[in-house]
Amino acid sequence: TTVLQMLNQYKKTEITDGCDFTSSRSGRWICDSCKKASTRKITPILGGKPRVLVLQLMVFHETRSQFGHITKITKKDTSNVIIKEKLNFLGKRELRGLLCHKGDSYRSGHYVAYFVHDTTRMWYRADDSKIDGPFNDFKTVLTEMKKLKHGPYGLFYQLMAADTAATATAVAAPAQAP
Image (cartoon, rainbow, N blue to C red):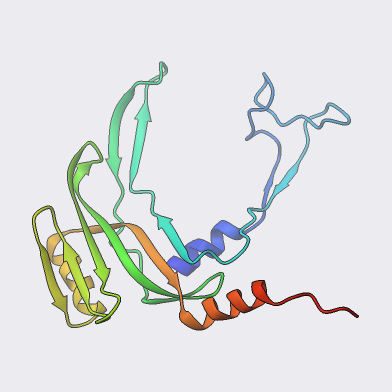
């Protein structure tokens, strides 16, 4: 699965039969007009072009008891997510950073960040006590992540300069009289 495939899946319209909502005591979505259970279409709205698109992958799943206590924490494997350096979603973007986690629980383990230096455009790894690098290219970073068993947890995609300039021009341009 690629990041773009996941984003496109997120954007899809979801049609429900009303049973998935908890807006009434019965757990069904109730129409405000007719007071009957209804079918709903839900489409996530993603607007604008944020300068940095931050994507958090769902890495941990909690199983809870009937009283709401966490009984088990399961870590999902994110190593099969295909990460590309370029992404065309809400504008053309470049991957500028990755946040990774090594460990079995969000309550314990180790976080590591990989990032691109603004000036040199080289990749580095930031650990608790040191910064390693530079790495030759992004493929080297991916190899390093697999070797150290660092699964991606957060991705940071920055709007590319051409799209940033176009967005700024569009916002700054005065309205033309007809």
